[in-house]
Every structure is written in structure tokens, then in C-alpha cells.
Length: 409
Ligand code: PLP
Image (cartoon, rainbow, N blue to C red; front, side, top):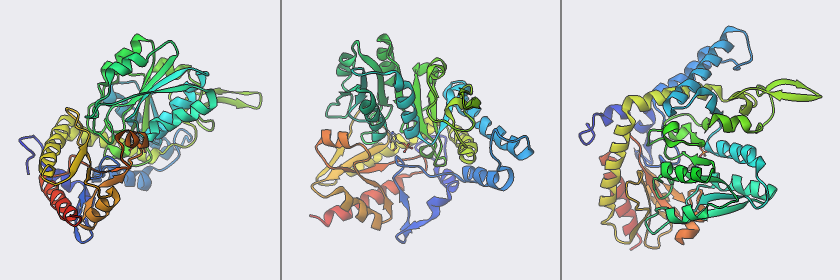
């Protein structure tokens, strides 16, 4: 099946994802929880198996063949990621995921902040971009300033602009909201912050699976993302950091591989990027992560985005007929995420009943409790799309939703 005049064949893409052939509750699985994590193509799984079966040895530690091979594979991924996001390899730090990347920046870069300094966040942040700053707040007494949204889920840019003041030391916001799907104008927001000489951290967890990334074009200071949302293995993330900033920052964790020389009189630290990579990294999954980027480039990010957008429009149109349905997040050009409630049916009930019909959606607060509070709701059901989803799956989802909501009327 060709996708809406695009140059990609969704059936053959689906063939690359064995998990999509399985059943759920005796029905074909319809996986619409891609915002939480996306599925992984065989080429990536094969790369993991290949590492375990042929090359496994600790990286940067051995002179022997296997260690050299494993090290080369890890460092090849670093170069691959760097080229993919238009950065240099020293600026690519491997972490466990977006969460660890943001914690790294808050703990390390944030160690220079003092009482009364201000960090600008937005009300649509995931807890991963709230709690690390609150931990820093409890240590240093910084203040958090929060940008609001309008009824569509679009950030109030005037308010954002007005929050910068003499004590502003950092702005940290998501590129794409995991609940609303809003794509924030990050390039403009970064430029505004830079007018005030304020560095920016962008949480790219939900942008990296759907948008091409160019750190130089964004003029970004820090950018965080996770492999598992990009068709990749869990346990690997990336912190991009501008070289001058990373060089000025103290290490985040101490241990093996991040040192120059250790003695009881004092320790010197390794150069970038290793200064921020204490201990054995998840070198197996890091090696395989390069194959995810191959996959994304082979399919083409533009094709992925266009296909997902077509599914988003189709699903939104089809869902409009369901009595009592309310969608949260209607920003123009939003990402392929639909958060919704139906009447006063609890989101868990809807999610559980959809699951019985083979449809996997996410329910709850989506790790965005302040946003839920802002919206005045405890949670939503969330359906989110990836390149392997089809219009037929949208039909199954909407039919299932009609069936389960009619049970409450
Ligand atoms: N930020 C956003 C916007 C997210 O959606 C998520 C995960 O859903 C995260 C951060 C955290 O990502 P991870 O759990 O991979 O660290």
C-alpha cells in the first residue's frame, strides 16, 4: 500500500517490524502508543544480536580485538548522530535517555546558579523537564517562571518574551508537546533567549521521531532526545551540548572513563565527550542506535512526517463524529498526537476497554501533571501515530472507540 501519494510503501515498512504481526486480545494489534515508545525494526534488533553474538566487550578499556570493535561501533554511532543533527562528535554525549540528559544539564550547568536566579519553563513540560529544575531549586533557591498556553495549546510567546529579566539564567522547553502535539517555534524562542544572553535547553524527546534536527540552524545550546522514541532500543539517549558550554561545565557523575588521572590528592577529567560519560555506557544499544538513523533516513523524515500528518487528519476527522469527544491540543501543524476525553468517561476505563479490542493507547496524566491541572482534568486518552500505522488501523481504533463509548450512553 502506497501512502497518500508519498514515495513510501507502508506494507513493506510494516514487514520490518515483527511485533506488528502479533495479536493482542485475539485480534491484530493496533499500536497507537508511539509517543510513549515506538516499535523497533528488525535491522536494529539484528544489530543488538550481532553485538552480543560477535563483538561484546567493554568499550574504551581493552587493547584486544573485541574491545576495539565494540569501541569502534559505539564511536561510529556518535559520529553518525553528530552528522545527523549537524553537530560535532565531541558535542554528542550518550545518556540513558532524555530524562538523564536534562538532569545532567540541571545538575552540572545549573551548579553555577544561585538563589534568586530564574529558569523559564512552560506549562506543557513533561516531568522530565520540571523535576530536575525543582531539585536544583531545592539546592540553590532558584525561581521557576512558567509560560502559559492558549485554548489551542499554543504557547504565549508574548509572555515568554516578558519573562526574561536580569536574573534569567536558562530557558528550558519542549520542542513538541507529548500531550498536545504542539510544535513550539523553538528557533524563534532560542533567538529571543539569546538576545538576553540566556542559554536554552530543548527537550526534543517528541521532536526527534518526527522532525529533522539541525543544531546549527537552531543555534541550540542543549538538546535532549531518546532512542526508544525513534524506533530504537531503550536505554540510550543523547545530550547535544554546545562545545564551549560543555567545556565550562563540571562532570555530572564520577567513575571510570571520565577521568584523565586519578590520585587521592586529586583527579583530572577526560576531554569531551567522555567527561560526561562515567561508567560503562549502554554500548550494545548505542551501536544499534546508528541503524535507527539509517532506517529514518532510508524512509525519509519528510515522508514520515507527511504520512503521520495524513493519519492525524484522517483520525481527527473520523473521531469528530463521536458524541461528547473533546480533543486537547488543536495547534496548527501539530504533531501526530491526539489527546482526548469522551464525556465524563474516565480515561482509564476507555483505555482498558480499547485494550480489550486490541487497540493500545496511553491513558493518564502522561507525566505532565501541571498541564493536566492547567486543563482542569485528571488525564486523557492519547492516540499517537508512527510511520507504520495505517488508515485501516485508524478505522479499527475509531470503530472500537464508538463501541466502547456507546456502552456508557
Ligand atoms: N520529554 C518528553 C516531552 C517526553 O515525551 C518524554 C517521554 O515520554 C520525556 C521527556 C522523557 O523521555 P525518557 O523517558 O526517554 O527519558
